[in-house]
Image (cartoon, rainbow, N blue to C red; front, top):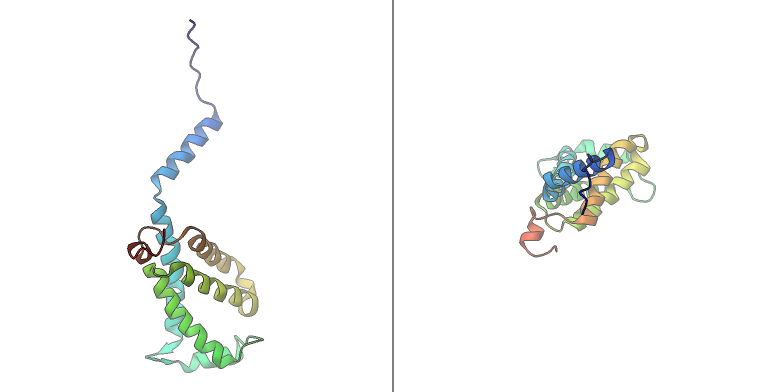
Length: 153
């Protein structure tokens, strides 16, 4: 029997091994938590600018009537829906409760903002959409109330 000489692994093998190592070092749950929390915080901060105490701020009414005017929804309805949606969906997403539903609602809001309000901000909206799609596709992860309550696999 002949011993074959050992050869050093090629660059492709080294890259594959490095890629696998990075994948093992990055917990999936941490990535899922980040996808939820960072987008949730952006929407929460936006929601807080729309209110004054427990009432919708005058500036919000003005913006929805003049700057954010949507083609199919009356501006006053849009202001209420956006304010309530940003508050509710962001809290749910950050907590990881009904995460896929919350991410879907935020994705719909993102698409409306991109299409009708700020089409030039596609890079920002694309990053939000990518994170929200990851939550919809992969779920909220183990660090979520969905997992704790048995609402997610």
